[in-house]
Amino acid sequence: MAAPLGGMFSGQPPGHPGDSRGQASLLQAAPGPPRTSNSTLVDELESSFEACFASLVSQDYVNGTDQEEIRTGVDQCIQKFLDIARQTECFFLQKRLQLSVQKPEQVIKEDVSELRNELQRKDALVQKHLTKLRHWQQVLEDINAQHKKPADIPQGSLAYLEQASANIPAPMKQS
Image 1 (cartoon, rainbow, N blue to C red):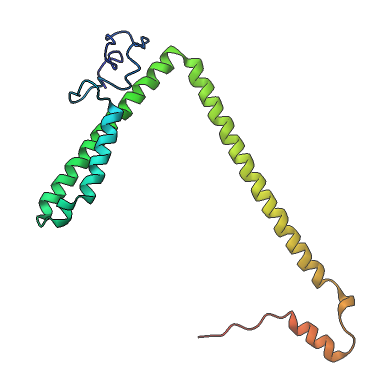
Image 2 (image 1 turned 135 degrees about the horizontal axis):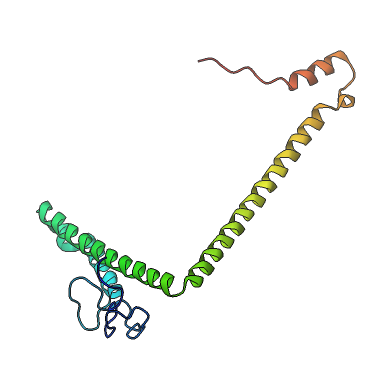
């Protein structure tokens, strides 16, 4: 990343990172292999992805018998895609750096907004867990209330034994 921040767009002279001329042609003239006059990194990223996908489903590769040739072709497509993806990432990192230098208050606003969103998400998660906790507490209270009602025990010794044995868990089978 030794390249200057200026000159990322066509028509943008180096040394003027705040100049946004040529920004309409997004990502054009980024460092890397030469591009066609109307090509941008985004266009190339899209076309290289399509080439990767096409190489995986191509009838030539399906009918091909030379596995090494197929592997080489797919590897080349994937490598081109990864290279362009790295260039795109580099571009956005450079723009982020420019923004942090030129407008540090904007970066702080974004950070505060992200933190607020995270707090809202976590508050919703806490509320969800509290709702579940209240539900299970109520279930436990209902179970405890059922076990504490001696008045519901039927009269007679046989009925009492049947009621008492219903609450005993069945023994586990040993294997």
